[in-house]
Length: 272
Image (cartoon, rainbow, N blue to C red; front, top):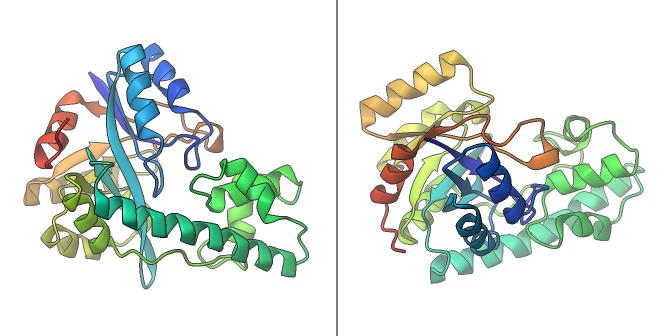
């Protein structure tokens, strides 16, 4: 049966609540979905409750945005213990950094003549895990750009005039943090990062899987990553990277079999 292992909620940069996602998942026939909000786990408890209500299995997860000198590397942790002290301490630092980052981005936009206020961004994020997508939504709402993609292309992208680096958690640090919290670390949408040369280092640091099946992956990408997975005995995962109205990708667009969910749980130290 199908499982979508890459889903975002209103607790980060998605537009659907955990309850809405659970209801949608049930209606389209998903047997499981993973909450993988960016750098925050606050959406997991309500998602677990919603999953019970609608009879859908919920995988507690998180997506860390990490950096190497010339690329962003996203690491997903599945079946994490959200009460882990080390995880909670790091997430607090990241969230404090996220709020400071928004103020710096807004300052840069203001210097470019764009009238936008930090409070407008925080209102769109609900105060939880604010990020560039929320800035993009504020720019769209203010008529500065025509689309979210336009906002990133013109201002917020990696080399954009309003880009500001975030808390510099490295991919290896993210993997170790996930492992220490009983979770299973996976390299998310690697073709997007276009940084395959880091995979051997990630594996030696404890990487357990690669997100092979992803909306932005070509057939050649899938073939390449399946070969890497088979060679190193990793878990091939997949998901839609659902953000609700933020992206034109529907929940359940990309799924994997429930057996993958069981393997991810067994690969970590997760306890119910």
